[in-house]
Length: 394
Image (tube, rainbow, N blue to C red):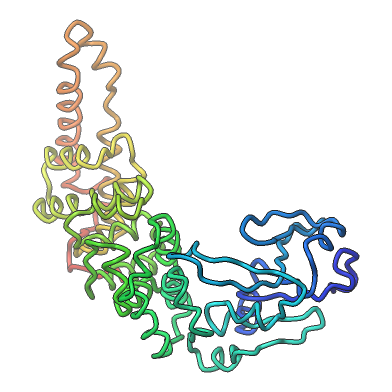
């Protein structure tokens, strides 16, 4: 209990936000956000709290190192999510602090004695499974549109209040969303992609008309929605989910630059489109030359793990059975990697310009022998036919 903690004894302290929301939903508790009401920075410093806040007073508990923020209000002072002036002081009430939060379900506080403070109807909206903004100040922070979209992907049985959806559209029309910086957009989008129903995030961004503003050039269709949800069901990593998100977008390089995505995400988005086209043209019985060409396209000999991930992503698009199909291609890669490139290089020490072609030829020849011996199947999988029956991967 907080009262037994000397650092907190006598302070009016509350847990707020997501930890309270998730506890009421019966979900595992994550990090707790604390608010201290009626205190000053000097009082917290005297108790051993360490100040870490820049724009407003946030302190680390002297023992637990959890963050404690003084209750505060905020006033819009400019465009974007950084355009705020904050005010703290002993006169700022808990209700004042909760009133600046985004959604009613995030504006519930819990005292150390278990008492809930819910001035904006958050418990009712939790019961009704509705996301509703606390007040008109929601429109002052464009990040809240992104957070709302991400919450929709996490809490898949929640709907968005019509008035909240309308307010988000007004924020887009008013240009407030244009102030979002790429790093913040990517932070929210990448987190949303790793949830169970990432399509809901993109649906909300599309419904609020924010999607063309935050991700210009991204083509959002029912097919893409299905692909990224199936990617989530199959446990694909972030790069694979992002690549599938971009599968119908014409200029993945420009989109990656706009969002400032990690290099691996940008690379897989670019490669997956080319890889799928190549695989569709190859069919189920590729030649050794076609196999080698795909390895070169994806730099598979240097990055086998990436090839495996790309195969998993492509398997959600193509009519194949994922595991057997991946096993087949990775077995072919193993064959190509058995070629001793160092020995070949030594043989051509006097003619180094010939080394690259000689290594390639040796790998192709090894694959031709393997394909001839095993009929296009890896030795341990000869009875499996990846394209037979056009099995579904959902």
